[in-house]
Structure formats: C-alpha cells, structure tokens
Amino acid sequence: MPKQYHSFAFFNKLNQAFPNQIQVTSLSMKICRNYCMHHEEIFPILKFLKPGYLKHIKIVYWNDSHMPQPPISRLNNLGFAELEQWRQAEELDIRGAPGFSFMPSCMAHFKVIRKTRLSETDLIHLKQAFVTNPSLSPCTVIAENMPRVPLTTTLKSYIPDDTPDGPARFQIAGNNLAVLIDIRENGVTVRIEKNEAVY
Image (tube, rainbow, N blue to C red; front, side):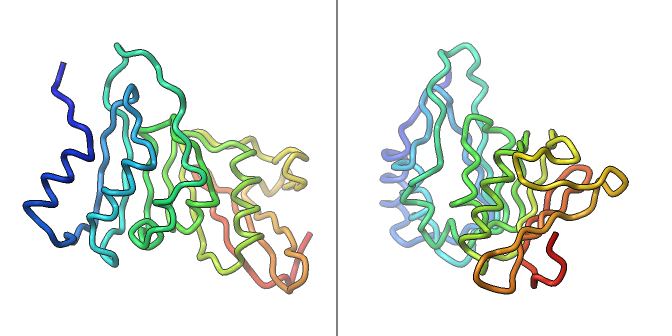
C-alpha cells in the first residue's frame, strides 16, 4: 500500500520551504475515499495559492476499492467556498469524485462544471442558486448522464417534445429577469436573461 501523508503535514513542510503563496492556474487533488478530504483540509490547500491565478480545479478519488467505503463528503456550508481562490476559479471537474455532493450554492459561480451525472434535483438547486443571486455569470454543467427530456413537473417546467433542446425560462419575482435553463445533448447552461418571453 502506498505511503500516505496528511495534507496538513505536507503543506506545513511546503510552507516552510516556500513561505509566500504560489501562483497556480490548475489544481488537481487526488484523494483517498477512506480518508476523505474534508473542508478543513481543502482550506489550507487553497490558502497556500495566490489569489487571482487559479482557474481550473479537479477533484478525483484514489483507486482504493479495496478499502471500506466511507461516508459521502459534502461540499455545503464550507469555509473554503468563500475563499477568493475558490470563487475566482472558472472550471470545476468532479467526475472522478462522485461522492462529493453537487452543491450549486457554492459551485454556480464556475463557468464550467464537469460531473458524471446531472439529476433533475441538481437542476432545481442550480435554478434556485441563480434565482437568489441574479448577478451570477452563465454556468454550463457538462455531464455524461443527463436528465430525461422533457423535464418532469418536479421542475415546474415543460419543454415541448418537438423542441427537446429548447430553453426553459423561470421568472424571478420582483424584477424583469428570468433564469434560463438550456438543455443540450451533453450539458446544461443556466444563465440570467431579461424577462421578455417567460413561459
């Protein structure tokens, strides 16, 4: 079995060698599911990086199928999600870490999110993230497994059978804006538009 190091010890040693934050544009974190990287471990990793440079974040699981399956890690209510390094990144790839929950509240700021499966529940939460924060830039979620089209009434929307790739719009109360959900063959783009043709 490969020798394993706790991230705190590793970054403490690295910080001693390089006391200043380093400029990193792409970060790939390979973690062991049996020792899931909790938010208190991700936080110092991001803090070690200089803000304004990180654009791509990738999280994958180590091949540890021989180990007991741990509880699923969740990315909600996490301190690192408020860090500049996280908020300024543009692309998140969690295809290799299916146990990490899709939490639009701290992910919707990414321009591109890559994940294995996108459910209708994910779309509902993604829609809500844009409703509560209309200043978000467009977010495209690319998934290998997509929701059925047309969407069920769970999303309170219906996309006609003859236009399966047509967008669905949802009015945001109190202003002239709408959340637009545009479903394509392998991805969904969510964005804010002026509420000109809400249906």
